[in-house]
Amino acid sequence: MSVTRAGIADDPLAAGEATPAARAQAAAEGRRRLALLGARVAIGVILLACWQFASGRLVDPFFISAPDAVFARLWQWITDGSLVFHLSYTLYATALGFTVGALAGFAIGFLLGRSEALATVVDPYITAIYCLPKIALAPLFIMWFGIGIESKVAVSAVIVFFLVFLNTFAGVRDVNPVHVNAVRIMGGGSWALLRKVILPSAAAWVFTGLKVSVPYALIGAVVGEMMSSNRGIGFLISQSTAMFDTASTFAGLVVLAVVGATINAALKRLERHVLRWRAPA
Image (tube, rainbow, N blue to C red; front, side, top):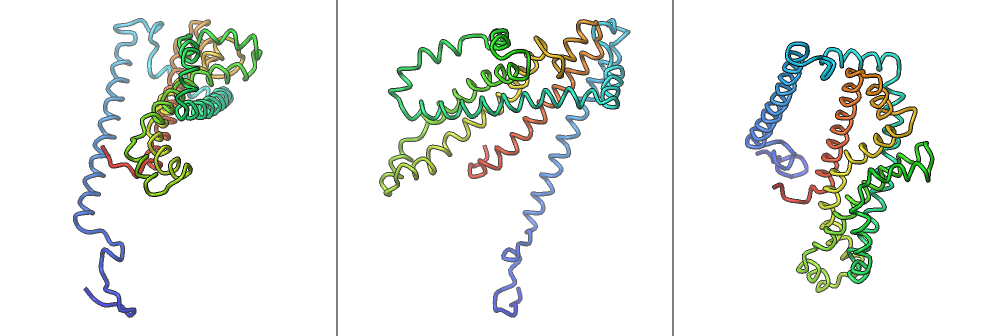
């Protein structure tokens, strides 16, 4: 260890250099991620191979199509611009519904979680509305908002609202009283209590609700498109089903699966960043 011109020891740790143990741990983590990626890819290839083998040999292609036909249809949609046109409409409706439902669910869940008296009063009404099948409300929303994007956003928002609301409400009520008392003993006011205890405690619950609600937001938008629309992935699937076009139906389902998985992965990365203060499980 040498001494620099400023008289500070040239410590590898102070200079931000990785120790051998840290490098070994990083290398092991890299190998683990590579092995995980390889296992996932292998499972996908095996499933596609089994699907391709079964089509025409074990099952009539009319019922299950085939991976090559599905990918050919996807490529056709990409080249003629159909995929971008319909997918952008679905994503726009999903994003609007997800945003409106998540904000409303968080606000009302936080309010009722902090007010036990108000939560007790409105609990029967919340329970009654929650028990309604949300998809059954789609025809009513079409009557109210028309066949435009507003009805799709409404269906998506209602589904997301309850998932985020219930998790936010549970997260706010799950605050450890010991932490609340500790902040108050140290002289913290309502703002400090909210910022230091309540919001961090509820954050994990809120992100759980957000992750769970993503596919349901997509489902709400797609169901609305299938009922009344002339664009969107739901419209493509409905049109393909009416024409007995199995390849196009599976192509639409593949697009929805990829979109849902991508959004969910993005939320997981955001959750790890926001909740980086928590010890890993």
